[in-house]
Image (tube, rainbow, N blue to C red; front, side, top):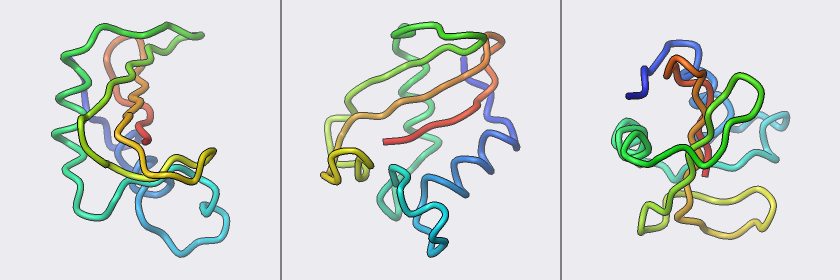
Length: 94
């Protein structure tokens, strides 16, 4: 189970959704209108891909375009969700 925390949600909203701030321009972004809560729920259905430091990383293919990858600058269907070991949401990005 993934616990959607205010801190994690605010981080995602600030850095990984549409924003005009130049300081956030080089981040992976979700497409406008994507149901991020649904993507978080989907992520909870997948086994962790890896554990790093005190975080669990889950990566999965949503099966449809969900946003733009910052490295390739191309549309992607892959979602990465990072939680603390206790399940608290830390970050999520395409």
